[in-house]
Structure formats: structure tokens, C-alpha cells
Length: 451
Image (cartoon, rainbow, N blue to C red; front, side, top):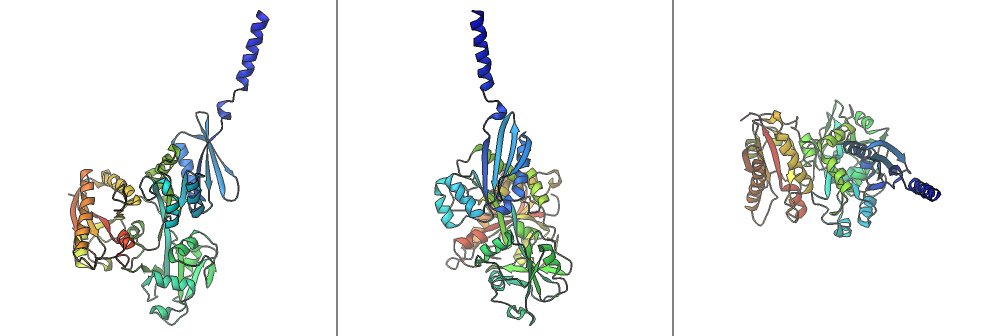
């Protein structure tokens, strides 16, 4: 009997040894595929910060191939692997549609064909499925003594396609346009091709440089020079940025115009997921919107989504941007905040487009800071021109401003001034849905004096 009992104990011990340990469990996997502009540097850093915030330890990076990076981590003996594949925006959304990724990284908006293919995922424009993580884009630099102050999107397209080669074709001096750009293909070229509708070939460049900063410095002192650089590229003394028009007013790349996406050459870096995305996927996407993640975005180089006061906005007095009397009156004694709220009136998931819905939460948090105690906002609405009903822009702009003001007041934010300025300052021409999406907007201005 004793021998039989001993044999049972030995068999039981052997069985226990054969059971897999917690560390040998198959790792849970979160797949994040898409734009390499987002996936090369920023996304790995965000993933590691997210993992650490949730108590994961033993973080390790492993390069799988030229486009794929794995980040492994462990929490409570349970392993997790986050797979980041920088295969391009189109591949990322395709993987999301086919179930090969939980999140897609895009450096642009999904096009109509991609949205149609993703119909079963829900509404990709919903704030619950689109998470705008950062901004980037292009700045057009010229020498300080160049007389040209503005370019249209069409004129920039003609320059980059080689159809416009002399400044005299733009109203400037009779000099050839010396185009300065980086010799290294990257996300900026991809964005310009997408935004300007250029062929998918290498764009012409008169002078190529080692990087964008060198291209910017090459403009100094050269009246014939024009450089296409990133929005985060340092602007050297002796140069200035051109205002860009897209069928509406010409807009300079100030902090408020860029971060509010009024400036035409801005691109979004976004994460997209299905309406039934995994808990891990949603957790990572929401973390990427938060203040800790946005501090990381600011440090690594893209433009953060954090709300701030535009340092370029004067505290008082009219400027070229505020020359219209009604606009100057609405914004007098105030400084513009770095957000512009827009709407998605066809959506069943709320009246704000995704980024604006996320900015409303940031705006409330910004105004609840101790430094903002006693401060109030001015809310200024704009609408699209309507040739069939000239009253519509005034009514619509007032309605939009009233809705935003009511939302803020309900959450304890003081609003002292609410104005609707009708069809003033359209950003793009036309009266179609695309024009409404851009032109129907609300600006937020922080009043200088405490209440």
C-alpha cells in the first residue's frame, strides 16, 4: 500500500511539473498596423509608456523585420506582445478591415473606398473609433525680402509639379524658383502627394539637402529660394512662412491655425479601431489622447494636441488677421486658444467630429486649471456661404456658437461673449459638404482680464 501511495505521489508531481508555468503562457497580442510616420518612433514610445502606466515590466523590443517591431512585457506573470507594423496607411486600414489588426495608424483620413470597405466596423469618424494623436504638415519658407506673401494650394501644386518655374508667374521678381527640399524621402513627401494630388513619383527638386533643417537654412539671403519643410522644422532668422489659401482666406501657420487645422497644410496622425475593438486596443488609444501621452508627443517632435494660448495672438489692437471690424470686436481683449471645433451633423454618434469631441474634454480640463481661475472665454462661430439663403450663415454660426457655449457653461466654464459671424473668413470655397465641414467652425478665445 505504501509503495502504491508513493507511486501516486510521484505521478502527481510529474503531472504538476508538466503544467505550463505562468511565464510560459502564450502571450496575448495587440496588433497596431499602418503609417510608418506614426509607427517608426512615436508609437513605440507611446506603447512603452502605456504599458508602464498599467504596471507592465520587463519591457523588451524585438525587431521582426524591416517594417515590424514587437514590444514584449509582463504583468502578474501574464505576458503581452504589442506588434507595431509600419506598412503604410492603406495597409493599416486594410488589416483593420480584415481582422489582422486591432488598431490602424493613419497619417491621413480614410478615403471613400476604405470607409465603404470598413462599413461593418461602424463609423470610423466617430470619437469612439478615431483617436487623433498628433498633427504634422508642411510649411513653405521664403527669404524675408521675397515680396510674395501668399500661395494658393493650386499654385503650390504647380510649383511642385514643374508647371510653375519662375517667381514672375506668381507676381514676383523675374527669377527662377530655386526649390529646396530634403533628399531623404519620407512622410512629408507622402503628405504633399496626397494633399496636392501629385503623381506617386519623386517630385522635382532644384536643390536637395541632407535634411529639412538644412533646406530651411539654405533659403536665408536668397530671394529666389523656396523651401518645403515640416511644421516642426525650425524657422531660421531671415526667412518667413507663406500664408496658404485653399479657395478661401490665406492662413499663416500660427500655433492656433495649425493646431486648429485652419491652415490648409496640416495632417493628422490618428489611430482607428472598430466599434467592437478589444479592451487593450481601446485602452491604448485612449491613453494616447491623455496628458501624459501628449507630453511625450510634444517631446518627440510631432505637434501635440494639448490646448494652449497662441503666443502669436496680440492682446489688443487689430492685425491683418483681425482687420474685419466684427471679428476684431468679437475677439478684442482676448487671446486665441489652439483649437477650432468642428461638427459632423450627418453622424449618428454625436454632433462633433472626432477630434473636436476630444478637444472639448481637453478644453474643460484646461479651463479648470488653477491658473485659469476667474478667466472666461469668448466663443466665435463661423459658417459656410449660402447663395440660396443669405440668412443661413448668420443663423448657423450663432447656433454653433450657442451650442458650444452651453456645453462649456454646463461644465463650469465661464463664457462671457458669444458671437456668430456668418460666412466671414471662409477657409475653402464652395457650398458643398466638404466646404461645410471646414468652414462651419467655432473658435475659442481667452479673455485677458479676470472676472
